Length: 315
Image 1: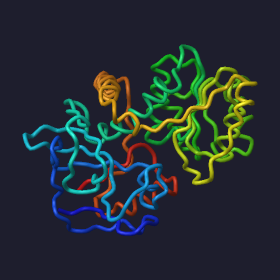
Image 2: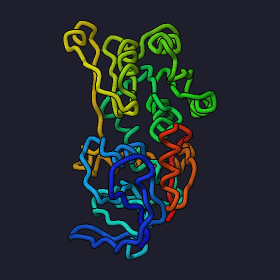
Image 3: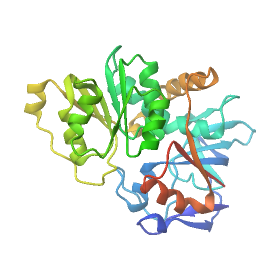
Image 4: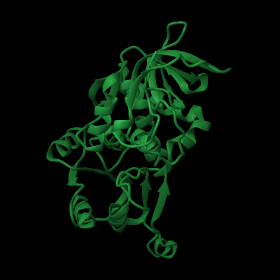
């Protein structure tokens, strides 16, 4: 089979198309013929071995695929790597049949990024009716869905942060009441201004560094900042627990991989969002589709922040 293999860590240049043997599915796993694979920001971290979980080479990246099972079912699955290939293996507990009316790209947009958005709001932030929500990378795979889900879950005001006018326009089209330039020098003030002069109840933040610090300053009393990424690739800022207590603010970390132990909770989110798509109540923004051989270009584009929505590789 053809696959993208990494034999040394580094930037996009380490993604090389090779001919490899088909993977052998262990007990409990199924070999899938891959129809499409998703590209995520976390994949760029894995390629340079800066992800939360250490990687070993050689490896085939890719944590999500839509594929055909041996009995012909179209499923979306989370994989323990191996998705950038013509065939991949997935555990039966981490695959879900894709209903009619949901495309491959839409399913890929939901299985990791959509479930992240759903659980960021429901499980970690525990969003309450009428609360304000600010979403970083609001034109990205997680952000485009989080903006819509926040509105669907009863947020009183939704703020989308993005780095370009075009991306902020997309966030507004998807339901953001206000948008903010994520490169604003005084991000704290910009967030408060976008929330009509009030501090923000829930902030979904995935940059780190100074962005984290300013976001925390914009958080309301009893607000929750949920940190779910390190796109700035800088050291983690310090958090003063005494200051958190003095301001009644909360900081929560979120990593979807911890939910792999609870497939039913992932399935709950997927079922809800599949239904919303079929009812016309949720839009999955599918960005560029790349041939498998152009995985390097996909990583270059996502690192340069040239992308919106879900990126897809097609074998």
